Length: 179
Image 1 (tube, helix red, strand yellow):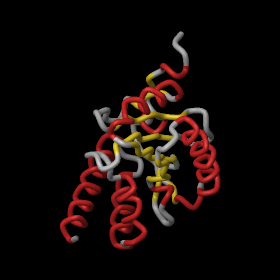
Image 2 (spheres, rainbow, N blue to C red):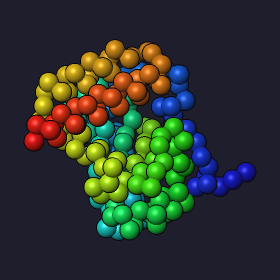
Image 3 (cartoon, helix red, strand yellow):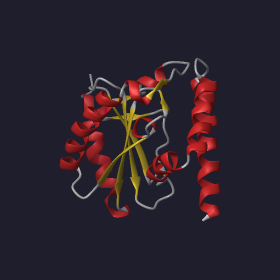
């Protein structure tokens, strides 16, 4: 049997073949508690990294699967070392991309599913914080995002991920182009 830090597992959200959503307010307290606990741990493991609560549970009024997403931002020259450190402590999320500037991990020891996205600051995948910050500033974008999620409630997870990714990419591109 391999050690827990060496396991490669699929996050609990990816195990189901369909998605279910809740309003973030129903789980806010527990998610914030888990985030604060993990932020402390991650800051100890990766001094100098920027630790951000991202995803729907970071946005009041958002619809969520009830999980916590954390973005760990590091400089390009620190990425490989940070990736090794996180792999020693958490399982890789095989349901997510792994590139030279993005690694995803899952934390299964918490009362809510947790995803940790390690990204290079200003790298290709450094959009998590921008997306989180856009949602509360743009009620129309948040409304449309929630509608997409509600449409996928009870449906296939794979299709949901594609629809969500396309919406995020299109919306961030339009926001960038608008200046």
